[in-house]
Length: 264
Ligand code: CO8
Image (cartoon, rainbow, N blue to C red):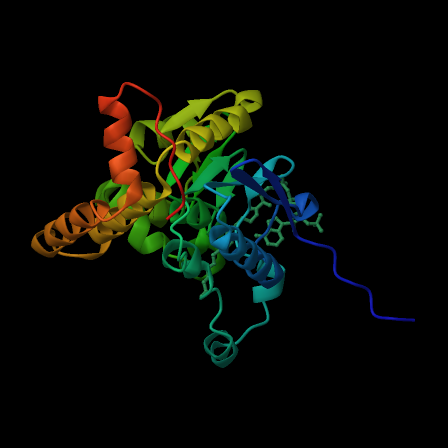
């Protein structure tokens, strides 16, 4: 008998200019195994390279967004293996590996713990349903966050809240996440995907080149000292004037008509 083909751990649906990427291991609460990482990162990179795709939504099937990295898979590793495997290194590609800078929208439908919360924080927009909750409970497992949590959470919500959350491993409710500014919108569960879709459709109607530059400037904000980041913003701003979309966008405004943008 031939070897069983492993079941796909993610599901991709493309609808017009938007792609929906669903984590699909509901029985394991969408735990982020190495297989999930490779499939998800490969899928996002492929969609990002696709000219027709203007926004990508990431969500979880079932009741969880993702209950973290796969503990079963990690439990037996020793240090040499973790280092040799470069465990979880590919997750960072979601943030800085997108050549087309297609925006990622995290639609957090349920628990987002450990790597699940870190995956959401890798995205450009995070919205949540009232059923969502967040947490970085790694310390309870004898490890620390390894997919950016110790760095991104304090940048996103401030050091005091981040250290409180990580050192106590406590669960952050959707309401608290909204009040912290960790998520930008909170909606009823049945409204989550329609809301994410509305954001995606809006984004998809704008100039892809301008959206890409906005994301690049946002990354400069995260990664550079202010003086350098301001120069980078100006460089990106000037480069907009080398695009057809700038002429189209401003021309359409002056002619009082809707602009038609192209992915350039
Ligand atoms: N990994 C593997 N399997 C998981 C995980 C996980 N993270 N979370 C849940 N599951 C599995 C359970 O084992 C269970 O499987 P089975 O039915 O075969 O026993 C199934 O999913 C359902 O889970 P529960 O029965 O526990 O469901 P409950 O509703 O009772 O509880 C909880 C839900 C509270 C979310 C609970 O499952 C839980 O606490 N999960 C673990 C959460 C966690 O600690 N996540 C952090 C993991 S560490 C991490 O993400 C970052 C590591 C970074 C390391 C970096 C190294 C470089």
